[in-house]
Length: 465
Image (tube, rainbow, N blue to C red; front, side):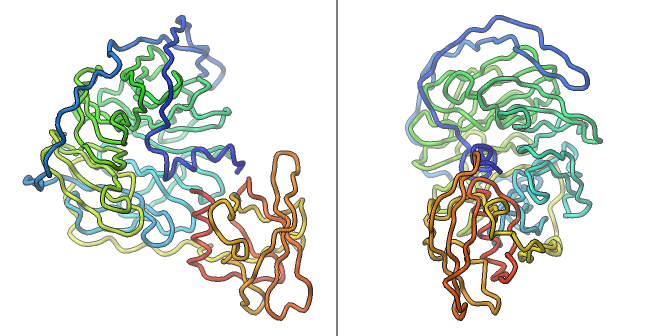
């Protein structure tokens, strides 16, 4: 995966509220979306500006310490976490009990989204080499693949009827919103702008898709009709607004904003009015998800250390912490009204490939035309140069050390030429090449063996962060 093409993958963990910037208002004449055979390719849409003045939020005094939520929380919450070594999909009851793991794969499994009737969960996985949209039953069975593209497909969102999924893809060069039928068919492109269009969310009446976009310089919230017409901007702030999600009755929108200097949780009416700040933390509060009755909102935050899942009442007065883990628990998705799990779901069997395998190509890793595609520069990530491949061992399991010889550029790809040595090698070391721009599930070159599966999974996850 090219470094420039990794922006959706970087989104997997670290980008929930886009970077803010100066705001420029650009009016665009209305044009009718062009239609091409088999695929809708809008050229431009009518922009309607919500009448929201900049800095329209009156920030009240910080809320006192919230009391625990007293009502019975409904349904279940899906989320992704790296608590077991790689990013997987989990589900728990809405009170934080009975946490169960749904996926078990060395790939990155992220961005869960419940179907409207709670019988399916869509998510993003790169288990076949590129991020695609997959669907799974809420007990971890019946995994199916919905999209199949060498591009990055991510951030799925179900239509209220359960017949379509909206998602983000860069298959046409930059991040746009697409829709696809759940039972198959060609994807339809909904947006067409040189900016990033992210975080789609379907309105409960099925008429609109809301999303985040940087089309007017900084990140703001928009909605567009499902036929690609009538683009309406809902927020107008110098700070970044992101992660919008409709309440179940369609009357309100929860979103994240940096307008007080930190990423905090806000709510507003469906037309963009009455924007109200719910949290006042000097941390990150992101990725809101409404409870099925609309009385609470789940979100992820690092307010108490690592990122965990919290639930707050929709008036901001009550707060529960659901997870407490040293690793990252992120991207909560609240189910419709499902019964609580009475017992944990059986953990799925690990998928093949949890430990790397040996390449059958004698030139793999030893040739600049056939490098190991690790997809990131370990030195940039803070790894010591001598240990940039902790998952790779010598033929008898000896730890290897690497020394950078040169950086080689072939076309638009940067390769690191390194010397790889291990104890008892009996030579000056092998010369290998690592591709730091592109990623494939790495293999061990011939004459080497695979090491710790934990280290291997950490390396794969680091490449896809």
